[in-house]
Image (cartoon, rainbow over all chains, first blue to last red; front, top):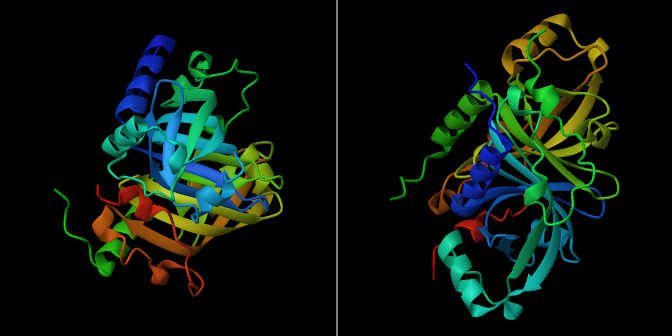
Length: 163
Length: 163
């Protein structure tokens, strides 16, 4: 039995709650050669961007050393918040101490002095649970920039009912 | 309170249970230009490979049209099964009918005649929950090929205790 589709306002509320309370996200990146990487990483949401941190030698940091794009998934596969993010790497030495403290408290670990922070700005945000929520899954008001045409995800394929 | 670290045998049991019973996985791929994609997709495990299916125009199918690599995550971010997979695309017309039926029953949708199936063979498999399970997270016996040195994931960064 599928729950009724949520309103846009409800999805925004739910998404903001996830951004504030969830600790981990799946972060997908790619190397310049087109090798995909995906790992779970802890994050902090500041109301406009997601902050991650990892060691500079790790694949995610290497893939984003010059900035770039990341795909971020929060929640479960049937309660998805999915976003495409623009990524700016920030050396630990350039981070404000109060932000470092807030990150450590939220993420549960304190990045070392050589660590890189990755500040991710959502270009588009989608939220859906089941097939009845595919319509209306775009949440442009949560994107930092005006959402252009969001690309089609495979949600329709995953959730098409048996025919 | 963190549960005691599972034995390798227990992790293998838990991983096989996830592979058999879970319906969805996070699938990360990359375009030739290095653009990451990640979406939740339903799968079927046949004991050696994971089978996915999607429309040929979707980003995941386009990224894997000539085969390649995918990163697959099953479970939650604190109960992870993470694998690197070698991907072989198979047109729907070339699939055995009984496999198509089994896939439809497991995944909950029946791919159309133009759909592409993606057969993914794990090159390495890891399973961990919290920091006390980082040691021993490699499960080479679940890989189709002998596992060489698995690359370091960012698990250590995510789960390092506060210092």
